[in-house]
Image 1 (cartoon, rainbow, N blue to C red):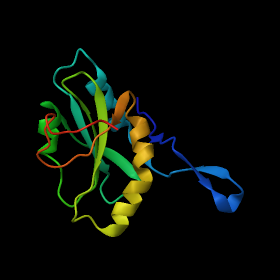
Image 2 (cartoon, rainbow, N blue to C red):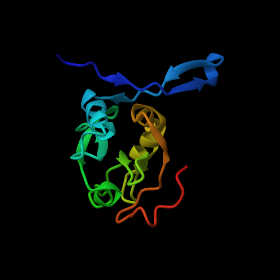
Image 3 (cartoon, one colour):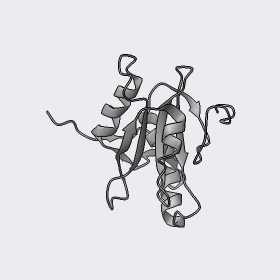
Image 4 (cartoon, rainbow, N blue to C red):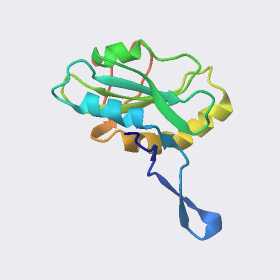
Length: 147
């Protein structure tokens, strides 16, 4: 049974329309929510993080780029260069956090579009207690506070 993609629930108010709300336009493909359910499953020790990014050349569809185990340290070592990516990870404390990673080599237009989609993607990562500032090589010891 094929699941329909999730249209992210982030709403933006368009001041030109007198305050009518509209969707952010990002589409979260079902594979993302399925993988996030694996991360959130306490009985599944094989998956504790996911990495999300654009589907091929799409400007609106977000898909699963990778998933794995090893916590924050593992995902911090697989961040793709020049490509904006979102993710979620289960910390050693058992808490879930999300992040957006955009390195300096990312084109400006893609950077701006990705920032517009941030809340929409984060809405798909249910149960997160906050957002962390992701960077390559990050460990929980030097992570800093969760926002």
